[in-house]
Amino acid sequence: MYSTSTQKREWTYTPEKLAAVRLETNIKFREKYESVITPEELELFVTPEEELRMQRSIEDAALKFADKFRPHIWPSVKWTALAFFKRAFLVWVPSDTSIRMVMMGCFYLAMKIDEFYITIDDFVKNMNVGDPRQNAERILKLEPELMKVLNYNLTVHCPYRPFEGHLMDMKTRMLLLNFDLESIRRDSMRFFQNALQTDVLLVYPPSQIALAAINFGLHAQVPGKSDEILREFLRKMIGIEEDSWSARDVRPEDLEKLEKTVTRVNHIMREVEKQFVAVTEQERENHKSRLSQIQNLLPILNERRKEAWRAGGCIGQEPGLVTEAPVDSDDE
Image (cartoon, rainbow, N blue to C red):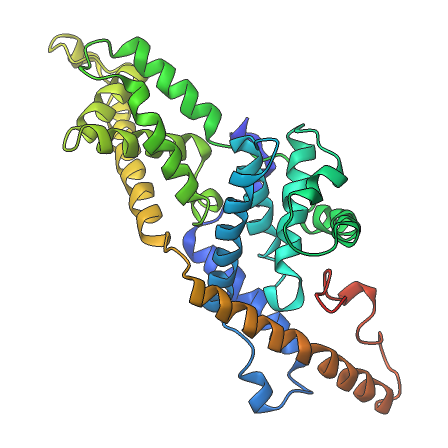
């Protein structure tokens, strides 16, 4: 189903394309204020790289929120929520939103999509900041905005189901392993948790992320043999026989597919290791301070834009109307 999904068609990128989209979104936001901003004020605006670290900070806090949530949240809900969040901030910028509340909106929408039923009142009881009534109102108000920015592409293919399928297949096909395959589960789940704070779910198919999680778990349990076990499993899955006579009938494209898959799986593991950088408390506080400064400045800049619009004869659409208003600003 993934091969024909909107996830693959609309929300899967190369790393280069992903960086270009983020840069374009950042430039558009800056251009909106370039005619009314001073050089000193412009220095407050953040780069795409700084915006990404702000997103990672919120993702880290959101996963801690999810781990403490009651009733216990399914892993697929977390993956769907983080996918919505990452997609939304390819269109929005943290400086123009309440990024924390957007994340809460993503979680509540993900619960509906994944049929994890909970009332809004029970949801906000799990939030340890803000007024529950106001939190509920803001989350519900955000929902249509979120669905719109996601282009109503609300189906997210998660790697947990392919992970379970691959693991079951390995148990069936590889009976001579001298350890319990279930022992890799904890490390594989840790891999998924780390992957949620990277870009891999915007770049790679869920089935390949699942294989990377299995290989990560194998590496933790049987260091030095993980690639060998993975390669043997893939040979059996693809149908490549190791018997010398049967091997004569192996198609070159099957061998190429095998090697490409192993290479891709190892690449995903390296990408998660490289991109996952834990957010420090100091970094989190710096992000809050920087966002607060920018969001205090934006109303002033918007008023300047309106004054310039009026001075120019009120030509075109008035700046600051609903079509370009901040998404759930923290000014409320």
